[in-house]
Amino acid sequence: MEPFEAFLETLDEYLILNDLNVTGFARRANLFPQTVSSWRKGNSYPALASLIKIADLFNCSLDYLLGRAAEEAYFPSLEKPTFFKRLNALISKSGFTCCQISQTCKLNNANFSSWKEKTVPKPETLVKLADFFNVSLDYLIGRSDSV
Image (cartoon, rainbow, N blue to C red; front, side, top):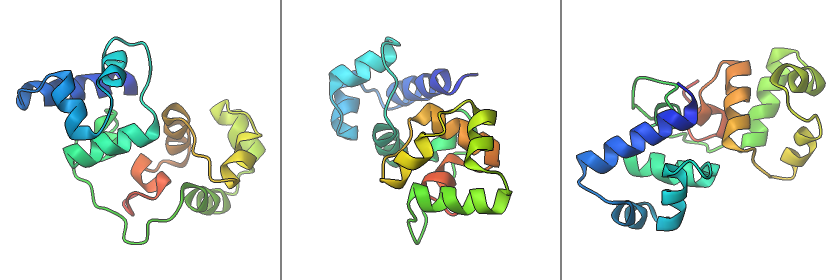
């Protein structure tokens, strides 16, 4: 199942279990109802910040939210390293160059420079990087220390 499809399935399950409509859920997650409706219609994909809000609300990992893990368990990072710090450590450990990673993951090599400036990739890109390094999304963005 694609991550976005899994996200929608998890979201719908949460709405049903908690007897919530889109407006009630959006209020709980501190999101705009129109944004949530747009996701459910397949018109847009949630940004990372929105996915983190939802994972925090559900008390689950991003990997669970996106159908990449069967377990909901989430253990917050004590240090809260930045995405770029984690990425640099993974690159160093892997022995691959940014160019090699870009080619393998079908990413623009210039992205690595923009990430130094504290920009964060789109969730789709994070999934590719997490797959490449064989780590959890939460680990990659510094939300958890669990690989």
